[in-house]
Length: 470
Image (cartoon, rainbow, N blue to C red; front, side, top):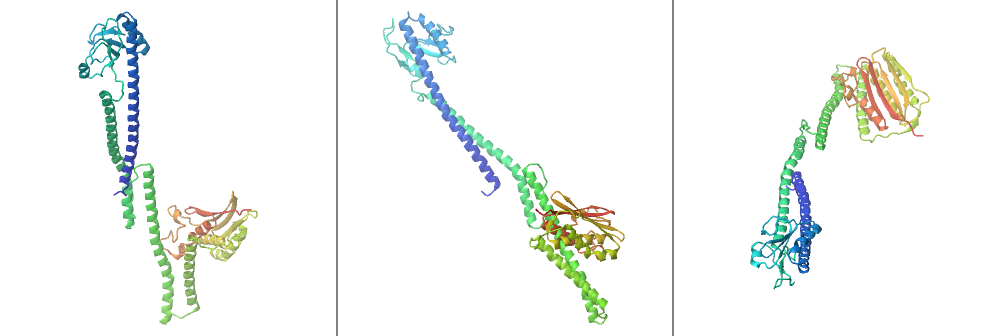
């Protein structure tokens, strides 16, 4: 279960959310508690300062008449309203001069620094949720007993039930926020993970069907993101595998056909001679020899192609001139060109830079291209070989005036056993390995090859070989 990508994604996102939100909540709680305590301490100091100022003003002045002036001065200094009440909650001084002589209710929402002069009953303060009074032993004029002063904040922060309730409420809100954030992240993770992982699950199901041999699987591309690119790559891979599988089946069929035809001929001739139907004449023996050579050539081509594709073909690289290779290759097919009534033209500049290649293998490339051109060019046609230096390469062209290649067949001409004529008639082509070997030999030398053709006008094969380093 824990190996599921969905579960791992869910646990990862949840862990990130819990750690992030939990860290924020922890620091927020500590910061809130610290700031609140500092606020309480500042409020206590401020209230005590106002109380002391009121006592000093009362003791040094003419009584309560100077308290109003003191309250107004303190309000200007503290930028906050100051209210002074007596033990009966009657307002003695108000910096805003609005509540003087009125009764001040303890549950009033008025924002001010409130100081009470006179004795306030303890039970009354506790019943109204107010902090205990703090006594001062100052003797005031016309007051026969010590004047107690009840301040509105306790001297020990954090011990007051109201403050503890406030901090508890903050912590409760933070815990609730963490819980809600965790639940929301869980829901969102489930929703988005399903949307993200659904294409992957579809790809997995298609891959399992491919594992069973079904190469018809395709997955619809629904987005252009990384998942969409992966889906597109998967479809391209399946197309390639299906094409390779079709080529493999065709190759097995083509190899069987190429081997069956000469073997059937050889078997038929031998059985005819064995039964006395045919005599071993030089012509018959020559036919048997030709069929044996065809088999030997096919097997050699297959072996050579296997070595090239496996990278095990031995190349004897030499620093040579391209004109020398072309001259030897054309000499080998000169008689066949005359027999077929074809004209060969060569245009190889003498000042071309040398190339470092295996002369025998590049000569084989040119011979194979010439044989392909002769096979598809009617009598009276022309075959030309040209070469030119371009940047760090030498481009070699083999052009014919033959029948050309259909556009739908052009992309596949370098594939093994590919024949435009599906009947595989020997009069229209060989085994379909010549161009495949040409491509692999050119690639083995670090070059590249391509073809251009116009139906009815001819074909041009071009291959590029790197110029030898100085």
